[in-house]
Image 1 (cartoon, helix red, strand yellow):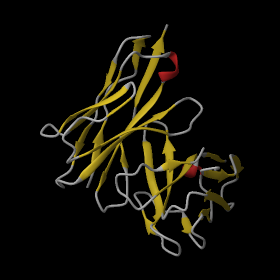
Image 2: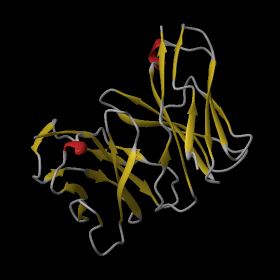
Image 3: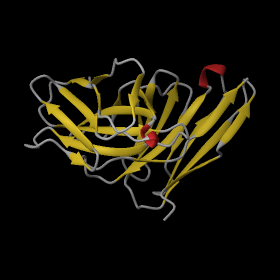
Image 4: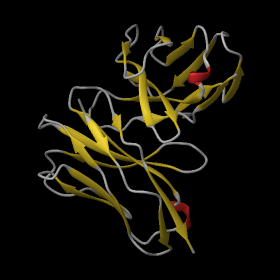
Length: 114
Length: 113
């Protein structure tokens, strides 16, 4: 079974600083993908970034980057230059290729303060 | 394009009542999903479908039924609502490529009294 662990307590981040959100996963399958989603207080789920297990380089999307450490089964999200609009819950999720399903972690709460 | 839409946005039910949540997508996606989100629990998969006419159980299927009679619609039914089904329900869809993200609807808040 797939298991995603996000255990950080809620985080306060100063505007313009970088923040790293931890995500570890557990799978014995060599073929899998990792996703990060943002859920602001309005409730919608917003896709941020994707990393495949065979991707050689860490994924980046604008201010978002993924620190992928395959041997440690870690896929941390880095948000650079935090903005007030980054205040939200952030969810890490994993799928095994061919599995059709996503397994979600419990989320990390981030509050950006001016 | 509207993307993924959910109806209704909010509903209050009494214990034992039934209701159907409708999810519609206009992206011609093969795969559709129903999740529930409870405080501190993340999203948990209820049921999903890999194509028109197919459905499969997810992580927490008890008390729910689903149907996918048309490719663009995925219905979630509660036959006899219980207070434990108070939650926010999200529908999602995606293409057949595993690397493709799921696209989520705005959610339905359900309160069962």
